[in-house]
Each structure stands twice: as structure tokens, then as C-alpha cells.
Amino acid sequence: MIEQATIDAIVARVEASRIDGQVDDQIVSDLRADFPDLHFTWCMDDDIGSEQPLLEKERFNLYLVNGQAHCLTLTTDPVVANGVVIAEVIE
Image 1 (cartoon, helix red, strand yellow):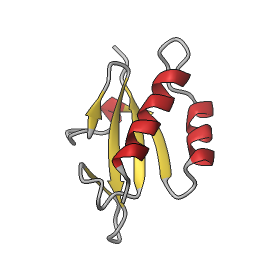
Image 2: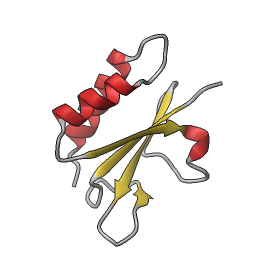
Image 3: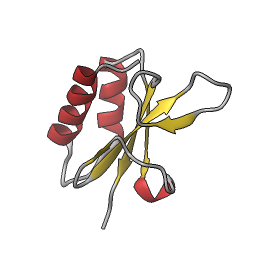
């Protein structure tokens, strides 16, 4: 489960840390250190496919990962989520 306050903190950190509107390895590394119980992935949004993001921002979309079954799936339900995907949006 990922609390709403945690999601809000992650979004705020990504928005505050972006350099020239870009997500980078340092942001993801910092998030992993600050939230060690969560798994973080960074990719391009067009790599995701047709899944619905939990949150859409100008330069990135936020997806949640459900790892309860044997296969990882994307979800919009924070109750079953245990990971976060930060998907960078580039025009």
C-alpha cells in the first residue's frame, strides 16, 4: 500500500528536482533512498503503452505497480501498489 501523502511527496520531489524539465538518475536514486520500501522505475511514457497513469503532469506521468501476484502489473489503486513508475513525457 502506498499512502496518498507518500504519492504527494514523490510528485513534489520530482517536480522540485527536475533540471530543464528532465527526470534523471539522481532523482530516482534519491527517491529510492528516501522511500526504501518502494520500488522505483524510470522510463519514457511512450514505453508504457495504453495503461492509465495515476497522475498526469506536464513532464511526467506517475504509474503505480502492483507486485502482489507473480507478474508485475500497473494499477491505479494505491492499496495494492508497492512500486512507482515515473514515466517521462517528451514532446
